[in-house]
Length: 203
Image 1: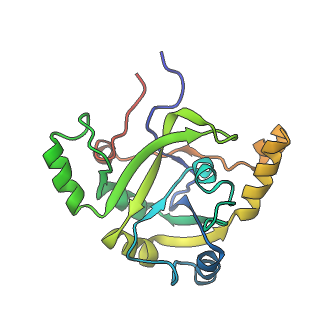
Image 2 (image 1 turned 90 degrees about the vertical axis):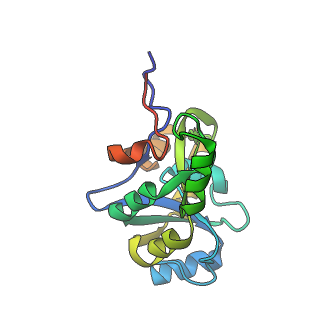
Protein backbone atom coordinates (compact mmCIF):
# COMPACT_ATOMS: atom_id res chain seq x y z
CA UNK A 1 0.00 0.00 0.00
CA UNK A 2 1.26 3.47 -0.90
CA UNK A 3 1.78 5.49 2.30
CA UNK A 4 3.27 8.57 0.65
CA UNK A 5 1.45 11.66 -0.59
CA UNK A 6 -1.16 11.20 -3.34
CA UNK A 7 0.35 11.30 -6.80
CA UNK A 8 -1.48 14.57 -7.53
CA UNK A 9 -2.26 16.80 -4.58
CA UNK A 10 -2.14 20.57 -4.06
CA UNK A 11 0.10 21.47 -1.13
CA UNK A 12 0.51 25.11 -0.14
CA UNK A 13 0.67 27.75 2.55
CA UNK A 14 -2.84 29.10 3.04
CA UNK A 15 -5.29 30.53 5.55
CA UNK A 16 -9.05 31.04 5.50
CA UNK A 17 -8.83 33.82 2.90
CA UNK A 18 -5.65 33.40 0.86
CA UNK A 19 -3.28 30.88 -0.65
CA UNK A 20 0.38 31.53 -1.43
CA UNK A 21 1.89 30.99 -4.88
CA UNK A 22 5.36 31.75 -6.18
CA UNK A 23 6.87 33.37 -9.25
CA UNK A 24 10.40 34.50 -10.11
CA UNK A 25 11.19 37.52 -12.23
CA UNK A 26 13.87 39.97 -13.22
CA UNK A 27 14.67 42.78 -10.76
CA UNK A 28 12.90 45.27 -13.03
CA UNK A 29 9.58 43.42 -12.89
CA UNK A 30 9.89 42.37 -9.25
CA UNK A 31 10.77 45.82 -7.88
CA UNK A 32 7.79 47.46 -9.55
CA UNK A 33 5.45 44.65 -8.53
CA UNK A 34 6.51 44.98 -4.90
CA UNK A 35 5.98 48.72 -4.98
CA UNK A 36 2.55 48.48 -6.66
CA UNK A 37 1.55 45.27 -4.83
CA UNK A 38 0.44 43.86 -8.15
CA UNK A 39 2.05 43.33 -11.53
CA UNK A 40 2.66 46.36 -13.72
CA UNK A 41 4.79 47.09 -16.79
CA UNK A 42 7.25 45.69 -17.84
CA UNK A 43 5.19 42.63 -16.82
CA UNK A 44 3.34 41.54 -19.97
CA UNK A 45 -0.37 40.87 -19.67
CA UNK A 46 -0.40 39.29 -23.13
CA UNK A 47 1.77 36.33 -22.09
CA UNK A 48 0.68 33.30 -20.09
CA UNK A 49 2.06 33.52 -16.54
CA UNK A 50 2.62 30.43 -14.40
CA UNK A 51 1.95 30.36 -10.66
CA UNK A 52 3.26 27.61 -8.40
CA UNK A 53 2.12 26.80 -4.83
CA UNK A 54 5.24 24.69 -4.19
CA UNK A 55 8.23 26.66 -2.89
CA UNK A 56 10.71 23.89 -3.74
CA UNK A 57 9.36 23.47 -7.26
CA UNK A 58 9.86 27.22 -7.69
CA UNK A 59 13.43 26.84 -6.41
CA UNK A 60 14.01 24.09 -8.96
CA UNK A 61 12.61 26.27 -11.74
CA UNK A 62 14.61 29.41 -10.86
CA UNK A 63 17.75 27.74 -9.49
CA UNK A 64 17.32 29.30 -6.04
CA UNK A 65 16.91 32.68 -7.74
CA UNK A 66 20.09 32.51 -9.82
CA UNK A 67 18.79 31.97 -13.34
CA UNK A 68 18.79 35.00 -15.69
CA UNK A 69 15.45 36.78 -15.57
CA UNK A 70 14.48 34.92 -12.39
CA UNK A 71 16.78 36.56 -9.86
CA UNK A 72 13.98 37.79 -7.60
CA UNK A 73 11.61 35.29 -6.04
CA UNK A 74 8.16 36.57 -5.13
CA UNK A 75 5.54 35.08 -2.82
CA UNK A 76 2.10 36.16 -3.96
CA UNK A 77 -0.87 35.71 -1.63
CA UNK A 78 -4.04 35.50 -3.69
CA UNK A 79 -7.65 35.03 -2.68
CA UNK A 80 -8.80 31.45 -2.35
CA UNK A 81 -11.90 32.44 -4.31
CA UNK A 82 -9.68 33.50 -7.21
CA UNK A 83 -7.49 30.41 -6.95
CA UNK A 84 -10.50 28.13 -7.13
CA UNK A 85 -11.93 30.16 -10.03
CA UNK A 86 -8.71 29.42 -11.90
CA UNK A 87 -8.98 25.70 -11.17
CA UNK A 88 -12.66 25.61 -12.10
CA UNK A 89 -11.97 27.32 -15.43
CA UNK A 90 -8.91 25.29 -16.32
CA UNK A 91 -7.92 22.60 -18.75
CA UNK A 92 -5.05 20.11 -18.54
CA UNK A 93 -2.17 21.12 -20.80
CA UNK A 94 -2.02 17.61 -22.27
CA UNK A 95 -4.73 15.11 -23.12
CA UNK A 96 -5.30 12.58 -20.34
CA UNK A 97 -7.61 9.69 -21.21
CA UNK A 98 -8.29 9.13 -17.51
CA UNK A 99 -9.87 12.56 -17.15
CA UNK A 100 -11.07 13.54 -20.63
CA UNK A 101 -13.72 11.64 -22.51
CA UNK A 102 -12.14 12.15 -25.92
CA UNK A 103 -9.16 14.04 -27.28
CA UNK A 104 -11.53 16.15 -29.36
CA UNK A 105 -13.51 17.22 -26.27
CA UNK A 106 -10.25 18.07 -24.47
CA UNK A 107 -9.09 20.11 -27.45
CA UNK A 108 -12.34 22.10 -27.55
CA UNK A 109 -12.16 22.80 -23.82
CA UNK A 110 -8.53 23.83 -24.10
CA UNK A 111 -9.38 26.41 -26.79
CA UNK A 112 -11.99 28.00 -24.52
CA UNK A 113 -10.10 27.85 -21.25
CA UNK A 114 -7.91 30.76 -20.00
CA UNK A 115 -6.10 28.46 -17.54
CA UNK A 116 -3.70 25.54 -18.05
CA UNK A 117 -2.87 22.85 -15.52
CA UNK A 118 0.36 20.87 -15.44
CA UNK A 119 1.50 18.27 -12.90
CA UNK A 120 5.28 18.04 -12.68
CA UNK A 121 7.47 16.00 -10.33
CA UNK A 122 7.75 17.61 -6.91
CA UNK A 123 11.27 18.40 -5.67
CA UNK A 124 13.07 17.72 -2.41
CA UNK A 125 15.43 20.18 -0.70
CA UNK A 126 18.24 19.15 -3.06
CA UNK A 127 15.85 19.81 -5.96
CA UNK A 128 15.86 16.14 -6.92
CA UNK A 129 12.64 14.83 -8.43
CA UNK A 130 10.17 12.97 -6.23
CA UNK A 131 7.52 10.45 -7.16
CA UNK A 132 4.50 12.63 -6.39
CA UNK A 133 3.52 15.68 -8.42
CA UNK A 134 3.24 19.43 -7.92
CA UNK A 135 0.69 21.60 -9.68
CA UNK A 136 1.64 24.49 -11.98
CA UNK A 137 -1.14 26.82 -13.09
CA UNK A 138 -0.86 28.89 -16.26
CA UNK A 139 -2.98 32.04 -16.47
CA UNK A 140 -3.90 33.91 -19.64
CA UNK A 141 -6.58 36.23 -21.02
CA UNK A 142 -9.45 36.63 -18.50
CA UNK A 143 -7.54 34.72 -15.83
CA UNK A 144 -4.48 36.95 -15.92
CA UNK A 145 -6.69 40.05 -15.80
CA UNK A 146 -8.41 38.72 -12.69
CA UNK A 147 -5.08 37.69 -11.15
CA UNK A 148 -3.51 41.11 -11.55
CA UNK A 149 -6.56 43.26 -10.82
CA UNK A 150 -8.63 41.20 -8.36
CA UNK A 151 -6.96 38.19 -6.77
CA UNK A 152 -3.60 39.48 -5.51
CA UNK A 153 -3.78 40.48 -1.86
CA UNK A 154 -0.09 40.82 -1.05
CA UNK A 155 3.31 40.40 -2.73
CA UNK A 156 6.49 39.82 -0.72
CA UNK A 157 10.12 39.22 -1.68
CA UNK A 158 11.47 35.84 -0.55
CA UNK A 159 14.75 35.97 -2.48
CA UNK A 160 16.81 36.17 0.72
CA UNK A 161 15.00 33.10 2.06
CA UNK A 162 15.82 31.23 -1.14
CA UNK A 163 19.52 32.11 -0.86
CA UNK A 164 19.68 31.18 2.84
CA UNK A 165 18.09 27.83 2.15
CA UNK A 166 20.42 27.17 -0.78
CA UNK A 167 23.39 27.77 1.53
CA UNK A 168 21.92 25.64 4.31
CA UNK A 169 21.29 22.74 1.91
CA UNK A 170 24.81 23.02 0.49
CA UNK A 171 26.24 22.97 4.04
CA UNK A 172 24.07 20.01 5.06
CA UNK A 173 22.60 22.22 7.79
CA UNK A 174 19.43 20.21 8.35
CA UNK A 175 18.33 22.28 11.35
CA UNK A 176 18.39 25.54 9.37
CA UNK A 177 16.59 23.94 6.46
CA UNK A 178 13.91 22.54 8.74
CA UNK A 179 13.34 25.84 10.54
CA UNK A 180 13.29 28.00 7.39
CA UNK A 181 11.49 25.90 4.79
CA UNK A 182 7.88 27.05 4.24
CA UNK A 183 5.37 24.58 5.65
CA UNK A 184 2.95 23.49 2.93
CA UNK A 185 -0.15 21.52 3.84
CA UNK A 186 -2.67 19.68 1.65
CA UNK A 187 -5.22 22.08 0.21
CA UNK A 188 -8.78 20.81 0.13
CA UNK A 189 -10.02 21.02 -3.45
CA UNK A 190 -13.80 21.06 -3.99
CA UNK A 191 -14.97 17.75 -5.44
CA UNK A 192 -16.38 19.35 -8.59
CA UNK A 193 -12.89 20.64 -9.46
CA UNK A 194 -10.84 17.51 -8.77
CA UNK A 195 -11.64 15.72 -12.02
CA UNK A 196 -11.18 18.86 -14.11
CA UNK A 197 -7.60 19.31 -12.89
CA UNK A 198 -6.75 15.61 -13.07
CA UNK A 199 -6.26 14.93 -9.37
CA UNK A 200 -5.58 11.39 -8.24
CA UNK A 201 -5.69 9.79 -4.83
CA UNK A 202 -3.72 7.02 -3.21
CA UNK A 203 -4.74 3.42 -3.80
